[in-house]
Length: 211
Image (cartoon, rainbow, N blue to C red; front, side):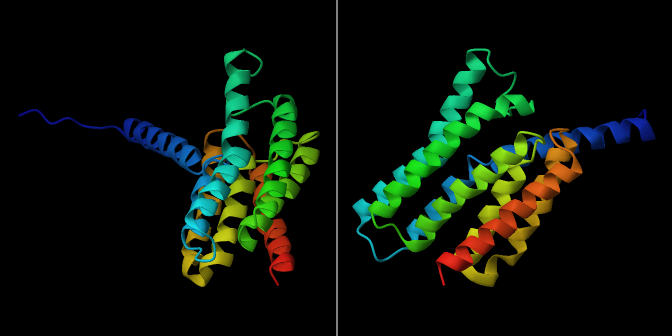
């Protein structure tokens, strides 16, 4: 029986492919338009103060304002040839999507506040507004990682809701950041700054509003 020998070069190539495709999966699952769905679903599912119909309404508002509107707009830009990729690889391509996302988040915050959403849901929506605004301002000169900002804000929100039990999930911050660097979407610096915005700005705001 013939023995198939693998060279170090072949093994290295296989490893690189595995890391690359793993990074694609991580970036897709923990994208800034997917994480809000997980986060708001988890918070609202455990709320016992609101009737089911009101919780569903609030969830739909959160879904529209943080995920569906901006995702639909980016897909429209891609299909119409106005951007090269749904990842908005070029810094210049992010200006209009940021404006749409910021407007959508602002409306979402006002509506959930008016609907009497749980405090964490309400002020997390506010964090979407302020975090998006800051990232938008920085992106005029430098392409900060939205993935890193999104996952940083999400795990902080989970910590406020579930407590220290979710501490291991903070590992998602470097994991998502590394995936963006591996895919060559961002530099290490852009990932670090994005992570700090998500972690620190969200923590400070939630700490203030929920005290």
